[in-house]
Structure formats: structure tokens, C-alpha cells
Length: 343
Image (tube, rainbow, N blue to C red; front, side, top):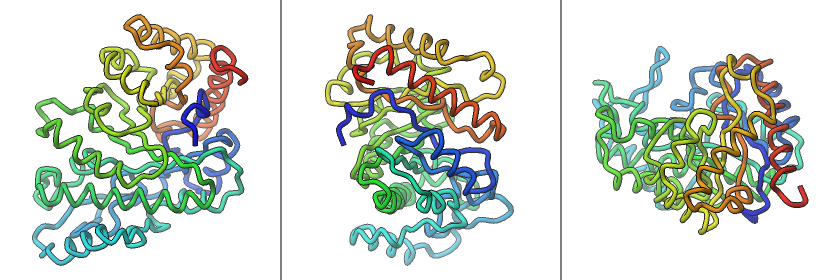
């Protein structure tokens, strides 16, 4: 799949507020026929929470009373050995995601579609490792063995997911979702840049198609751009200006063929009524211009882009989600009319 052919097309981050997986998939197919993203349904079940969703089969994991943790009082040697054996043998079927954990994914596989590409997502190792704790509420990321196991586990989950998506379309996009990267460098997260990159690269290396990283807050973008990602996905509605603080990194990323996924459509109910496709494309144009003034080619930015919601739509109403997706489609159309040749 040519990176250039993605220019200005819309896709989604993942989560929606729906309970019924068939209804969610119909919505995605209606508004995002070119690059549909399988819907995560966190309101349907705690197991479909983005941190629980990819936990199935992790050594010592316990899910109870809407809490997830790793019970280190168990002997984890044998389950860790099984994880590493499956990883080394590339036995990704051992990392399958069950229907109870991702009903939207399984319904998506059965939804009639003829897409240009399909998008999936997996929770990233930093966010998963900080959120999931042991029984003493210590994040597993701070245990070197469990942190490494987390990255390998998520790598194989992503690979299994991607293999299933290829049955719909050979061209795939998988985002590694890292909301906790917004806390990187703060007093609350004690992890080095080198460790972040190693863990992210482990997961990215399991993805054969286009691979992206999504962060919905402000972060040190140079860290994420130092990985082998193909797509940088960010909340451009509230934090787009922060990317302009890293012009050299963005320029190098685009020159090697990178794509910017601008999360320009707000995902807050209060913000949606005041926006139109024109107002959002104007807002996007200001951000593109800010990078252009620092030497990041306007042409490259507009040739190599996707548009998305700022982040998950799960906090919206069902009606608000449909409105946001309709607005996203209109933004894509307006953007492509302004900047993309032959759109």
C-alpha cells in the first residue's frame, strides 16, 4: 500500500459508546468505507476496556470486581516460559482475542465491506504497563521481566489481530495507543527514553503493514518519532500546536515517508456543535502553516496525512458519535478539495 494514497482520508481511533457490536460496525462501515476501524466497546463490558481487552492470556493476570492486576504471589515461571516459547515460535494463535474481550472486532470481521485499507489498534506497552499493576498496586512496567513480557505479549496480540484483518483487506494499519505517553517525563512516570523506545519497537516489529502510534495529549514527540512508526496520530484539536515544537523531528519523519494523522475533530460533546468542516480545516491549516514556517514542507504535510477524531468517541452519546463521524467525513472532503490533487 502506497503511503501517498492515504492522503486526507478519514479513519477513527477505535472506541465508540455503543453496546451492540453489529450497530457499531454498521456505523463504521457507513461513515468510514475507505479505512474502517474496528470498534472497541468499553461500555458493553469491563473486558472491553482498552487495558483489559488485550490482557487475555498474560501470565498471572486476574480480572475481578472491575479491576485488573497481575498476581505475583503465583509462580509465574511456567506461564512466562509458555509466553516466551510462543513468541519465539511466532505462534500468534496463542494470543487470540476472544469474543468476550472484543465483540466489536469479531463482528467487524463478519461485516460486508470493500475497503481500501482496514485499521486496527492495540494498547501500547507503556500505557498497559503503567495501568496494570500487581496485587500490591505496583505498575508491572517497573518490573523488568514483566515489562519485557508485556511488550512481547502485545506484539503478538497485534500480529494476531492484523492477520485476521488481512482476511478483509490485504492493506492494514495498526495503531499502538499510548495515552500514558502524555505523562512521560513527569514525576509520575519513572522510565527512560531508551526504555520507551525499546518497548515500543518490540510491539511495532510485530506489525507488517503500516504502523502508527497514537497519543491524545502533549508529550515529547521526539521520543515517539525516534521509533520506526509510519503514522504519528495525535489530538490536533487541543494539542496540535505541541507537534510544531519539534520541527526537525517532524521534517525527518515526513522525508522518510511518514504520515501525520491529524485528530482534528473534537471528541467532547460540548465542542461539536460549534464546529463545521470549514472551521476545522481552517484550524488545521493554521497548524500546518506553523510547521511550514519552520521548514516543514506544506506540500509534504498535506500529501501525507489522515484525518481522525481527536481520540476515542466513547464519551460521546450515540447521536454525538454519528455527528462527529459525519463531520469527520466532511473535513476529509474539504481538506482533499483544498490540497489533494485529483481528490
